[in-house]
Length: 137
Image (tube, rainbow, N blue to C red):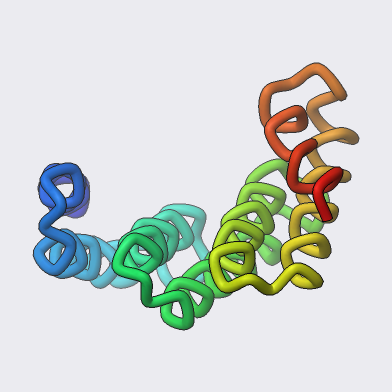
């Protein structure tokens, strides 16, 4: 059932109907939390979906809250040097950059870059995608 809400939310988001996307993603989060508990990668994924919608709406504070929740879950579940944790740092870097917060952007992008470099290598697209963030700041 949660997957259906995610799919519907993605369709709404794709059409630019961010309010309805948010409603659908929140329904998926409620189901996933009930089924898996609060410390599960799928729950973190729902926080990421919700954070992405807030980011698209320009609500950077709520985006940060959601992405931070995902980071905390992923760190507890996977450990601090997992590529999914790096992805969460990358999400935070994007929001901080949108806010013009160069210090936090560099910090988050650098953390993500180091994890991707260590786990995926220098030629991986995830690692290379962060080079502009790290080099720029």
